[in-house]
Image (cartoon, rainbow, N blue to C red; front, side, top):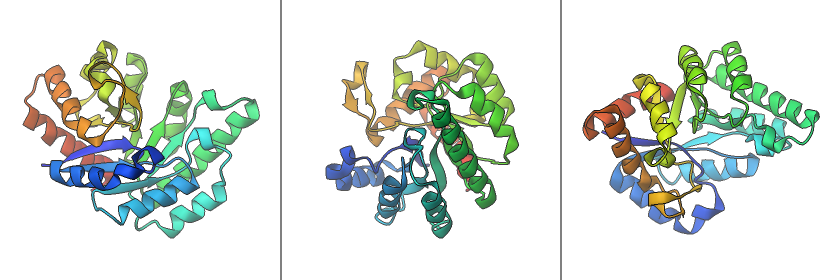
Length: 250
């Protein structure tokens, strides 16, 4: 059995100095990682990391914070490396980064084009939906994407039910270990649609001491998940492994 970190930014400079240790840790623990990207530059870094370890599953794309990045270049990068790319992400919408209506329209245009590309290439996607979940849930039915992940799900129970009806995967991370709200959401999620993530290098408080998330946090997240769902640890790993296969189209 293997584990999957469904969303981590391994191309982030915060990990650069420790990359050999991280890759060795992934091998020792049996953890693969969906290494998501922010823009063209980080996407190229992610692709290079994937050549160093087959445990790194490269996801490339334009994060809504980077909506002004060159979209045509990203499309070319994806098409030129379609055989190497495991998925497209991190993509999505976020009004926090849109100062004008024009900015938000640009985010939507980027999101739509990359979703269309994912559909054509039959690639899974990792979606950022902070404060825009309703808009994204309206857009999703227009595309036929079997592996669509709403990463770091932070919606309501009603929005979760809609996501489940649409066949979306949702992922929970280290914050679930100490957040009762996230634990409630997890308990309401269809078990065949659950994934786990770290979203590193995000820092987490409480028992994680504000340390940047490491892939090695994943077993702790799975242990917490097991307690919430009332099943043993090995069964949880098996469940997540099957979910990961469906998400990735493996």
